[in-house]
Amino acid sequence: MTEPLLQVRDLRIGLTTQRGPADAVRGLSFDLARGETLGIVGESGCGKSITVMSLMGLLPANARVGGSIRFGGQELVGLPESAMCGIRGNRIGMIFQEPMTALNPVHTIARQVAEPLRLHRGLSKAEARREALALLDRVGIPDAAQRLDAYPHQFSGGQRQRIMIAMALACGPDLLIADEPTTALDVTIQKQILDLLAELVAERGMALILISHDLGVIAQTVSRMLVMYGGSVVESGPTAAVFAERAHPYTQGLFAARPALGATKGHRLATIAGSVPELVDLPPGCPFAGRCAHTVPECHATVPPPTLLPHDHAVRCIRLPEIAGVAA
View 1 (spheres, rainbow, N blue to C red):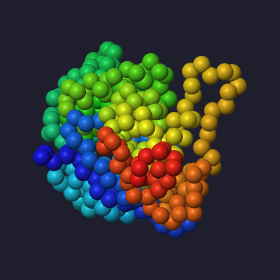
View 2 (cartoon, helix red, strand yellow):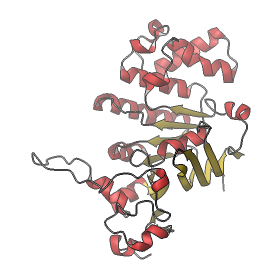
View 3 (cartoon, rainbow, N blue to C red):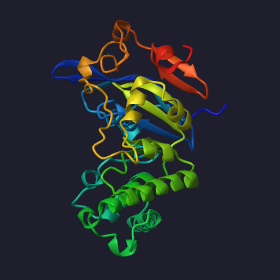
View 4 (cartoon, rainbow, N blue to C red):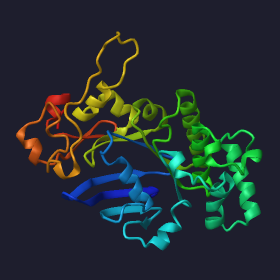
C-alpha cells in the first residue's frame, strides 16, 4: 500500500497566553493522498488556521508542538528551519486568506512571483520572469505581459488572489493549502477561483487542503472534510457522507445556521447558543460541552472516542445513540 503524501498523527499545539497555557490543537490525526482534496470547517478560533500553519512551520514562537507530521515520508515536527525553508514554498504552497496583506506593497508582481523560482529552482532573473509571466497567464491575469511590473494595489481583489495562487504554484508543489481563498470576493469571482483550483489539482495531481466557513464551497470543492471545534476534530469523513448524516450536534448547528433560499422576510436564522470559549477555558472533555443542548455532566469530563459510521465517517460524541439514532 502506498504511503499517503501527508500523515498527521496526534498533533498537539499548545500556546502560552497571559492567562496561562492553552491547547490550540488537541490530538488531531488525518491522512491526505496525492491528488486528494480535504476541507476543514468550523467557527473562527476552532484551530483551522493554526493547524495548517503547523504544516508550513509558521507557528508563533510561543507555540509547543507534539505528535507527528510526516510529509513525503519526512518528519516535519522538530525539523530545523533551514530544512523547512527547502519545503515551504517549494513542495508545500499556501494561498493566504488576505492577499492585500500577504503581498508586499513595495515590490512588483514580477519580483514576488519570480522569487520562489529563483530561490528553490535556481532560475536566472530572465528565466524566472518568463516563468512568472506563464504562471500569471495560467491563472487568468489579463494583459499579464503588460502588468508584470505593476504593484499589488493596481489589481482588483480577485486578481490579487489569482496572483497569490500563481506564487503558491510557482515551484509545482505536491500540496497546496488554501486558507479562505475566496473571502470578500463576489460570487462570480469566487466561482472562478474555485474552478481554477479544481483545474489545477486535476492538471497537476496536487493534494489540496481548503479552509472555509462556507459549507457550499466545501460541498463543491473537496472530497473529504474535517469539522473542527475547540482544536479537535468532532466529525470527519467523505464530504457527501458528512453532509448527508450531520451526526455531531456542532455539525448540525453549523448546517442549521445557513441562510435558506425562499425564507420569508424577517425569518431569523438558527444560532448555536453561547460563543466559542477562550482556549484556556475549554472543558477537559468534549470541547463543545456547555454550548451543546445535549450536554450531560459526563460530557465535561470525558474525551469522546471516535465512533465509526458507514462510509468511513467518524463522529466524536458520547451521546451519539440518543442524538443521531446510531449504535455507538
